[in-house]
Amino acid sequence: MSKNYYAILMAGGVGSRFWPVSTTEFPKQFHDMLGTGETLIQRTFNRLAKIIPVENIFILTNERYNDLVLEQLPDAEQRQVVTEPAMRNTAPCILYAALKIQKENPDAVMVVAPSDHWIEDEDAFTGNLKQCFDACSEKDMLMTLGIQPSFPNTGYGYIQYNKETSAIKKVAQFTEKPNYETAKQFLDQGNYLWNAGIFIWSAKSIVEAFARFQKEMTALFEKGLPVYNTEQEDGFIAKNYPLAENISIDYAILEKAENVYVLPATFDWNDLGTWGSLYDKLDKTDANNAVVNARVLAEDASGNMIRTSGDKIVVVDGLEDYIIVDKEEVLLIYPKKKEQDIKQVLKKVKDTYGEKYG
Image (tube, rainbow, N blue to C red):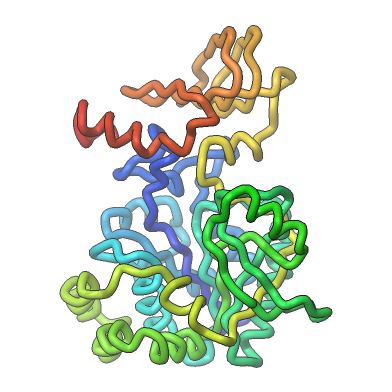
């Protein structure tokens, strides 16, 4: 375990497709979505701590979740919680955290990892990460971990790489979520991977990339270099962070840079973005229902995702491929095939019954 290894754990999202469990006040990364006894952020933190010193894992989140992070990650200190006073997508927060880390350790190499992903073989993940750290320590590279696609998924972005024999591949291009026919063509070509949003680079390389491709943003955040990692940092960030452009790391840097590489991952992965993706990863009953917390009596009911709080008894008859989620004041019974519409349902609920339900 190297003192030069760092992590930026991205934990600022709301996860609205997991409503009603995930809400603005208490988003999905702070819930035990899998029924394992650990929340998603706890699982991710512990996974990263197998290779990265605990004190080098920084948690990037909205300032409203600061106390939740410290409550759920008792091994983390306040200095490790990097809060955003405004939501500005992924590029500004990554630059901000990279500058803080570079000031603390100019030799740092870091992984940027979402806090809410499912990874089964954690030893394989650690091995892949070590491979990337080694590469980025030696060369000026911006790396990502790509997932071998198992079917033509239209919900993920894709990474095309140059066909070559080396384990680490040069990225040819990134493609946004394709339609089904295009996704099928990608799989047939054999040199496309799912974009998992896991990035690895040295602090030096990513800061230099920002200086080249995002001059205004770099100038904005470099003004804070004298106060980063001091008591004056919060005041500077509160004033200047909202001035940053709202842009993703993909658009800001990765689609422009020429030194972008990908390592095809050797672990199974799921971004746990919807109830359907959670259903896919949970154990199933004999009737093919996925159950979290509840005790279920099912008659002529299969393919359902069922989640309650506590140990509630749920009786289901005649439902197939539904999401059934019970949470205090909200009960959701919704077709799995329409799960992408849950964001719109949430908006209607808030418009009709008030913000407290979302």
